[in-house]
Length: 293
Image (cartoon, rainbow, N blue to C red; front, top):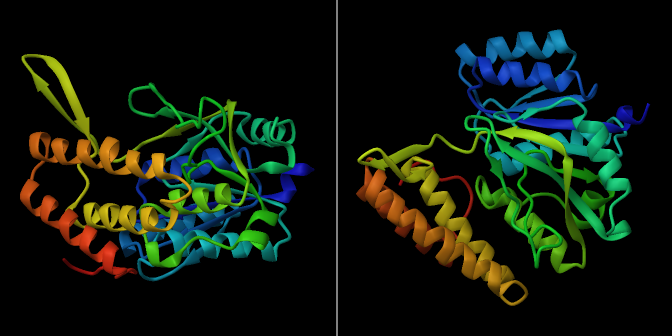
């Protein structure tokens, strides 16, 4: 079976009941799954152990939070050891829909980009609202950067172009890898026939007199730090080849985030301070895990 050549990598961090349900759905699609846990508490790791054992998944327990990049790399290297030819990457909040794997493999093999295709992403749908989450396209054609969760990559990509950057820790990991591959002439495609239910962040909505004004992810100050630091770090490396994308990061994403923090989030000054520290560390290339601000 062709599915035996595919290994799914799922990164977990304090998984709850919904995450265990997501893993059960994944078992119906993909027989080979490695779950990499980034230092979950005893209360959450024990149910995860039971679930992965019941489903026949391989569980890697890091014992501490090593970051999304390192966790993904550990999962990919495990996939290599079992001889997988394809890797499907997931975060814990994403849920596959029936026929996901078959559609992704068919989409990759029939892509218009042929041997130039390095990553294929599914069609994302917000699990909470049911609304589509559109991919960012280059001139309406190939995808600009791939979201990690749901991405399908052939193993030759990692062998030929390396793994994720451990020092990014979290945020921007997918941006950097996407730009790295695109800078070497490869494409990122989208498979509209494969649907992934995705839950981006913990949104907070701002309304005025019953009208929806905006929605924000409500990330913690430390998460805001990583976003800003890694955005600067990635932009410094890829500005010459992808100036439009880097400008989009700073003005379309960054500026909007600042407005949302000020208007709709708690601890706004602490979060803005975290952004400034992150930007400074990005310029000075102070990378890796940050235990406190």
